[in-house]
Length: 469
Image (cartoon, rainbow, N blue to C red):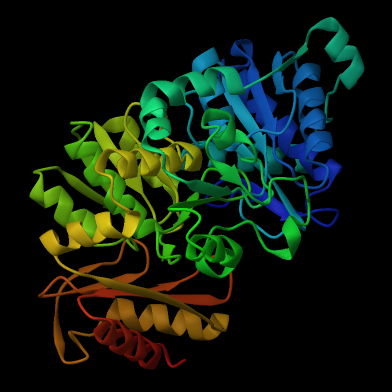
């Protein structure tokens, strides 16, 4: 089979695609790459989430690393992806591997590569890894291993706790004592994932639901989006809590529920934290957002005189800019947000704590903070819809939009376009519509943001007509 890395690693269905055999091939290619690049001598950090057999898969990767002469620091228990990413950077390791399928349904598992800087492998690196996997398979490259117990006894594999260094970094970044003194009642839903127990260990005043180990994730994919957070919403509506936080399966993405029990999207989180970093923490730097992310970020950057970059979807693109520029904050629609002074990586735990810090400092709820910002820069509504589309229709649509993009949509003139990832049409008043055919599945994604909900819905109806859906 062909091994392909997606937006963040290689993923597949357990026992069908994600097998020990295929995992060993990917692990061997990774070790070949590290040794060729002169990174193998710096060692490898390996972590894993709470998915079915993740510990066993992680041990298999450690066996391959040991067999190839690469010293391993293996997490002694499940851990969030950002804790492993931080450990890579803090220990000066050559790279890291995280066994996780993030927010995917429970039948999936995955293999994420973290580079020495503590962020996800850049596109050039994953391209090389794919080429090595293919070459090794074509040429019968043997997977070289050392049995786990033998490698452990020899010291080739060392068990470690990634919490200690990560917690020290978080405590340096966020004023945990301030949050405790504020008396905020907060509850966290780690969605049975690898973030379970982490925020309560940092803040004993915070409660937690869905924290036990459950590889089926309670029948709900561990993605912190509105429809998956109904229990959290009910708890907030009861009045017992003021803030609800949610983490995805490996805790690198954040979701939230506000004081009214309403879902607080990544766009809202990005906006509130960006203002908090600027006004309370007095931090500066550029802002990076993906093409499907709210315009509120643009307006805040303009208000405070910050440079703004817009990238294709995928945090790897944000990471590249964080490595090249002085970036204050970067984020995407899916809940992946990263900040300056940490790692060029998404971190749901840190961002959740920054939300609590913003509430503690201001004495205001999340929705109140957002409303005050929108009173300042303008009020916005956002929607996304997905539609299945056949490959032939998808190609027809792409050809049509490239060769003859509409100059008017819903009676409004298109003032600017961005075709770096899909087809984004920006109107004179700043409203926008994005038509984005998926590159990996037969799905058409339509996004819009405007000053009224009615306008958003009209733009999306027009997009459906353009696409013939």
